[in-house]
Each structure stands twice: as structure tokens, then as C-alpha cells.
Length: 280
Image (cartoon, rainbow, N blue to C red; front, side, top):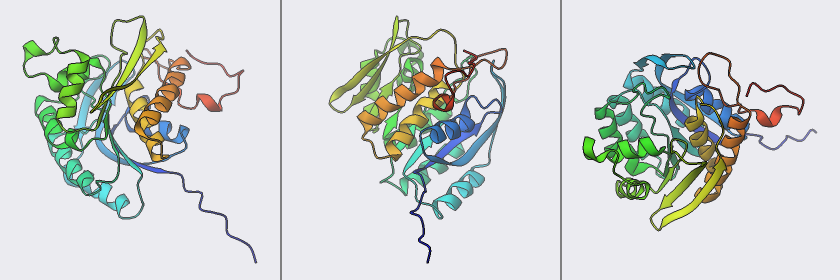
């Protein structure tokens, strides 16, 4: 009589995000990041995009009912250890996703509040940001804005946009109801990148990383997905944030430039032999 092997199922993370044909960002980046960190990604497509490594040309949101059907189908079939949210596509999509995740309050929610592409192409309208503030951020376990996104999310007026300090931004985001805020310093004009995790007690950790040369397509997607993957493995928020930063920094340090625009992070850096050529 043969014995059956133990269940090899890795942790499952359900991702809500848009498709990126370049594979640099979006749901493709989420899948590769989670695979690289030993998780299996379940994917709900929220929008289709026309983009290259230079910028985003067009976005076609998926119908909200179809977004809900995608999510409900997999949630009724498989247990999920974490949710990860990226570009959500429309106000209607944000609303249905908020309703879905509210049915699973025990599952951590990691939100990458993507507002614009690296070139500055808008990916979230003011109406979408307002709905995100009202329905998603209050349910978020961790939200991972860069400095520009943090200011945009909390700005009360156009005059307020550049004035808010990062500690004030974090306090305002926490007041909206999220549990933790990880503000990344990649857009700050500092010699090194400092990423700061805030909670109700203030700064929980501040990690410093060497600033790499170049511009990267999908670095924010990678970081948020890595946080979700680490939490799906059972790490607490502080440990998950640190592990995710380390993974993300390595993907950027080994990034390649396949097109005429930004570099793409190498989420499988760990699988390359020392002699493999890198496009970085």
C-alpha cells in the first residue's frame, strides 16, 4: 500500500489588479513576486491596459459584476491567506471589492494605492480615490504608498498636497481606519531610500536601503505583493515588511531593461546562477 504525500499546497494570495502586457507591473508582477516567495497567486483581473515600459496609453476597466464573479468563484473553492489590491479600474470595482473583502475580516488586506504610472499617467480618478478612502482603506491591514501617493491620498485641497509631512500623512491614513502604513522613500530626494512603517503607536520600523540608479517599472507592485506573500506565510507585519523590502531591493538590483523605457525587476533573481547575464 502506497502512502500519500502530504499536501504540498503553498499559501494562497488573492490578487485584485490590472493586466500589464509588459509583465513589469500589474497582475503579472504580482504572480511572479508571489511565486518567487513561495506562494500561489489567485488572480482577479480588474482592468486591461495598453502600455509599454515607457507609460500607460489606455485602461479598460472590467465590468464590476464580472470582477465579483471572478473573486467569488475562487473564494468558494479555495482558502485564502491574504488579499492584495493594486489598480482596481473603476469606482464600481472598488465598491464590489470592498464588499467582498468585508466578508473575510480575518484575512489580511495589503493595498498598493496605485494612482499614476511611473511616467505620471493617471490610473485613479478623484472619484476613485474618494471611494478608496471610504471603502478600502478602513479595511486595509497594510497600505504601501510612496511619498507622492501618501500626500495625494490625504490631501484636503490642492494647497495641502505638498505641505503634509510623512508622519502627518501616516497619521491621517491611520485615522481613516487602516492598521499599518508603509511609506516608501523611493521618490524622496535623499542619498538612500528610507521606508518607514507606521502603526497606532507611531514609527514601528524605518529601514534604509542603498539607492539604485535607474527607474523601475513595477517596484511598488513587487513590494506590496511581497508583503502579502510574507504575511500569507505567517509572518507578523513588521517581519513581513522587512522581508518584502529585502526581496524587492534584490529584484531591483538585478533588474533588466528589455525595452526603451524603465527597467523591469527580476523577481526570479534567486534562481539565476552567478554566471547569468543581467540586463541591469
